[in-house]
Length: 255
Figure 1 (tube, rainbow, N blue to C red):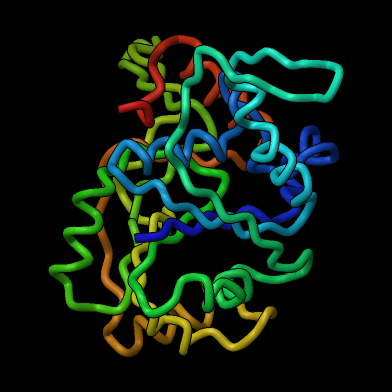
Figure 2: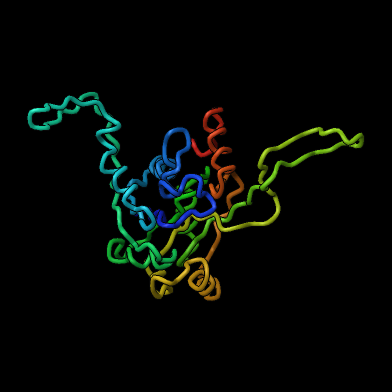
């Protein structure tokens, strides 16, 4: 099953970094968040990726073009540029990089991949959120549902730290970015039938609007409830929080 990652947005709320690189290339622990997302899927055996590019897509293309050389040792013969790799650490991922338009909406990006995906089920997620969602359980849930689409529902994280205050107004507990126990939001990590393409019209289609609304109306959209960790990277504060989790050795998305 192919994994589509939407990586073409402008990332305006993270402009401190996205003036130079697209949002999926903003780093956590020295690796782009895009790499972290892909590595999560790969641990469950899903290693065929399609990256839907848009804003500064050439940065992502260059990253993967240079990936093998930058992540392996080699000897280069300067007389003719011949490279002999040594101590190789191959990564068995297949990555398709597809320009889906600088102005395309999320649905339009997915639609542009129709021929590449073919008549198969496929997965879709966003290039700016990490989670410890169990992909195997997600796919099993989708297959058992008999529906055309499944979306992972997650609890959002609070924007600010949560204080537990006792009767003496002393803080008994402080939680930085706790997950809210009530309410569910779209966390990405979709599993979709190829028939979902029929719900998407053109580049201007926002997947989270008419397509998902109509799938829900038709009784074809089911949720996979995820009670665990999920965190998007919308702001510099989010980026700093994820980096802190990584450097503290407490990154829940690393199973």
